[in-house]
Image (cartoon, rainbow, N blue to C red; front, side, top):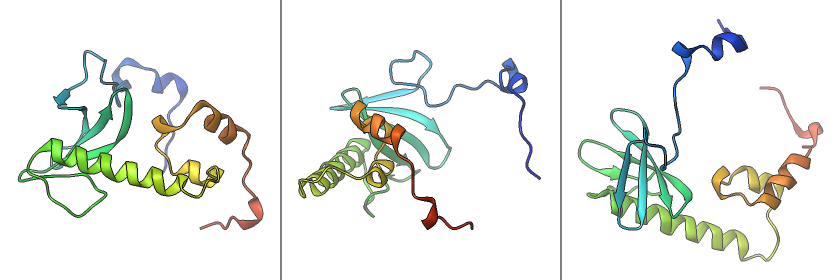
Length: 139
């Protein structure tokens, strides 16, 4: 059964929960490692952390009981900094491979980017974008 919350219920104090706190929020659980900030999101095992480099979120890494991982490779890392660097390296290669063609990314490509990584021009393109509905199929 699917239920929806009314606006009044959604705004009530007992349902409010701060999620996705920025690293500058005093309530955020932040782990600083050289060159990166890890912000705890949720989870027990694995614990999920958003990875920030400067003020830009580059992705998510996971803390297990015995190791760290970044979800973009199959490696297990002993230290969070290694998982963050592996993620950062992957994202650099991914950006290079998409810009190597010299073509601007399509709107469909922009949907695959992290929302923090979108430029204001890319946001404007996405706001104007209307997908072709003839290719959509109901599942």
